[in-house]
Length: 136
Image (cartoon, rainbow, N blue to C red):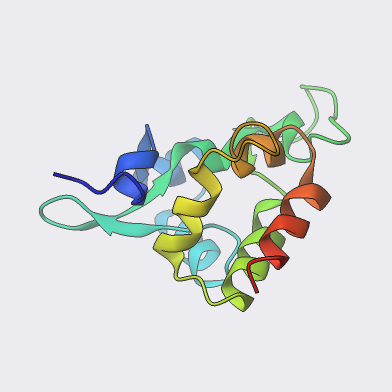
């Protein structure tokens, strides 16, 4: 049985590195670099364990920055949520592992309401990062 606070239990949809690469229109090496640079978070899951990314970290290109959406015809079809990197950095600075950071982003927070990731996707990164900094 999976603990209800693990990424495995909280995240509905996962993408493998090749799936992320296909969605973003880049090669798998670029996706791995995004993970290494902290622009994207991934954990090993499954049997055999493969590097997997929550699908919700990717957004339609025009919503990369939900606080200032662009026209749909501008830019890439899919991209990484722009506010994700800074939020992952704040969580890392607070001592969170990658798995813990993913779980935190997907855990409902009554004060938001919803999950921190939903708030990020709605353009409320300052509010989310303030809560993440409170974890220090």
